[in-house]
Amino acid sequence: MQAELPNQETNVSDLLLYVNCPRKVYFINRGYELFPKMNEQRLERMILKELSLTYPEILRKCTLNADTLRKELETSLTQICTDLPLLFPRELADVTREILEEGEARARAKIPEIAANLIEALEEYGKEPMLAALTPVKIEPFLSSKKLNLKGVPSKLVCFEGAQIPSILKPGSCPEQGVWASDRIHVAALAMLLEAGSEKEVPFSFVEYVSYGLLRRVVIRSSDRREVLKISREVEKIKAGLMPERKEGKFCKECSFLEHCALDSSLMSKFF
Ligand code: SF4
Image (cartoon, rainbow, N blue to C red; front, side, top):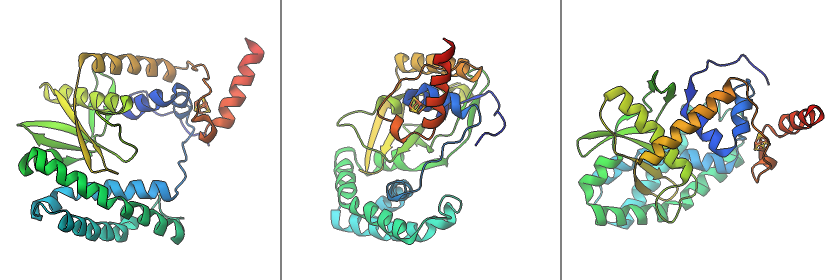
């Protein structure tokens, strides 16, 4: 469906789309909409994201015991599944009972691993630093910078080692070490936005892989900042009308824009 062209300020989500496929930026900014299908997997991810927001409250009242922690997470997850339709009425409007139950079962199956990883981190880093790294001082604050021509919303800001630090909740897979390249771009862009507003350096950020209960600290390097600026400029060109070349990839099969993308490419090939 085509709608009005949005304003030209770049969103951090455009940078992430670009990393996934530059052509997606083109379609989104021409008013086409992504329609991510609501299925068990997406629901599982939504539940686990919500669950991660309850970690601080749970960890505050728990002793370092895997059984207690698991039980608290189970109780919290049950409450989240009750609340979910109130939190996401539009997304869940047409979801069947089977999908709801399957999504809940899939999320519940992750609890033992989440509990084990949280306990391990508590033992390694201590309760207070963990609580500081997990506890939001703001949830989903809007950040923007005219200088960067960029805006974005981190999942939360936490207060760690005396500074406000952006943190993102990622429900997908988790690398063995560190974070995925796209997550590095994501937190670097948010750190730069936070710096633009506070004029204080943000030297690191956090990525929470919520399907595993793993928290990763990411040092923001100059190379990450350079990459953010480079991608932002490429995105600006696309928003100004440049259509990136089509690169057939593994994501094409499930892409919402496949039909338009293939059509536009075949039209272009007739002219060039
Ligand atoms: S079909 Fe492939 S190349 Fe086209 S927008 Fe989608 S992912 Fe990108």
